[in-house]
Image 1 (cartoon, one colour):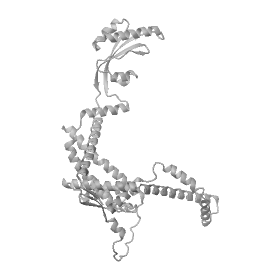
Image 2 (cartoon, helix red, strand yellow):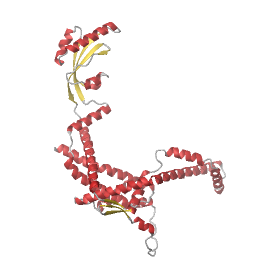
Image 3 (cartoon, helix red, strand yellow):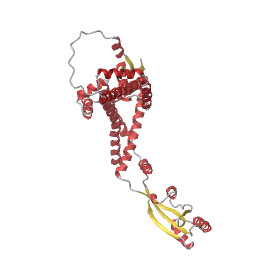
Image 4 (cartoon, helix red, strand yellow):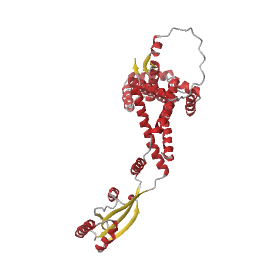
Length: 407
């Protein structure tokens, strides 16, 4: 493996980690946005007498799954479910339609107006402007509460599915951390703490405010910490495996660059093209048909690009042009596509142009030198995909070999 490719693979290894880290950062930002930071620390509660663990507490600590004899508790699943539900948002793509239907139903309730009238009397409203301001505030609050209720209902409906996802996510994290431990990879508490601190700073909160905002959303910060710990440990595991298995095929790089260029309409090759034009009088259909037949005869006698000048002379007034190397985009369709699909040395069928019948021949082609940044980008994307494939297969193998017991 050359140094250039090795650098691309190393960069892709970092990108593999970054992809998941960005997703986690985004999720954490959403959590922080849900609850404003507390303005003052709560006063410590007076000490209470110790009580025996409740039935619900015992249920939370019950073992739900064993992964190679390592437990996952019901509490962990409950916390991870809450985290996923928080990021799910609620409402779904049809939130607007649901809200419009719910609001239409609410406005038919006569008690809605009665409550507004009571509120106006309580506020001792005396002017029309005051009444309109209170009415606007009343409606805005009603709509906000309605939207939040629809979102809660949507999240509640998703809970069974999210609980299953949470359980599977925790199982995979156990497998990742177990494999990392087997390889001597350890993510320290200080590393994880640094990530949490960075998230807080990006959300313009202190670390304590960030943690409190998460708790206010019903999610313990330990859920986020363990997610990061597993993510970073797995990144290192896959990096080590990927360095041995990932290789970048330059042919694949060229194909990716070409495909990208086609999407943007950019040229990736230059074509060496020659052309013979047989002029015809304007709107003379009989002359056009005759010239077309002559062009077909030239094509049958064609023996390669070096024969074109001689063929043009044989046709009398035919004009031969050596266009040298041109970009395909300079030729109008459909000739452009025909030139690109032709093999070197091929002559295209005659085509009708403004000045007569044209016959093109593709003599050679050469790739357009790609900007080094574009090549690096393509290599990085390919390596990233390879790392993702390695990671998926690695985790699949770990799961197949694991002993997983559902309680």
